[in-house]
Length: 202
Image 1 (cartoon, one colour):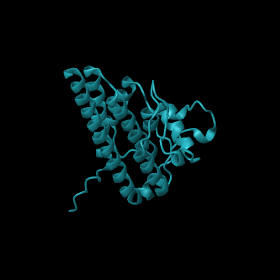
Image 2 (image 1 turned 90 degrees about the vertical axis):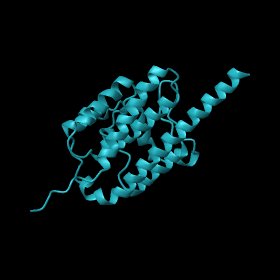
Image 3 (image 1 turned 135 degrees about the vertical axis):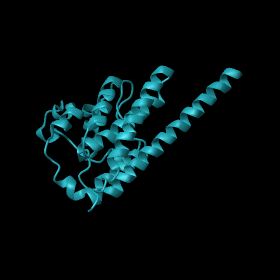
Image 4 (image 1 turned 180 degrees about the vertical axis):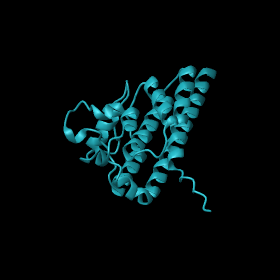
């Protein structure tokens, strides 16, 4: 029937869109992986808590689970952690939303102890409402200088969540809003990965 074929077509388009989103996200993580060694010295000295960082992700400083080690949590502390996050994203990480739980389809990856911290970040730190993500993109557009390691990681994960939400949104109006948020997050990450302009030598 015509309606049935139309439904299949829409499902196919949504499926392709999701593949494009995931490919882009994995490419971003690849860029980060490649730039990690170059940035390692800078990142190792970036553990202070700046007011700008708390403005971007205020929930990171009041994690509900209460242990001191989870205040301002970060998943990536080494090149191995960066590679692990890449594998988790490739495996199909699903970030918790209103109607879906945090899930990693690969049981071996899901059983790793370090994944517990990633779950805390995804459940308790990342913004989930569109209004919160819009506020985040506004702050990101006003920032000066590079993002800290923690904020870069959270922004990549927020982009994953935004892409997943967009793929499951049916309202055209909401699709446009979530699509714009995804674009703004991508631009913020792309800008952060660009090398700083060279100072002209006289």
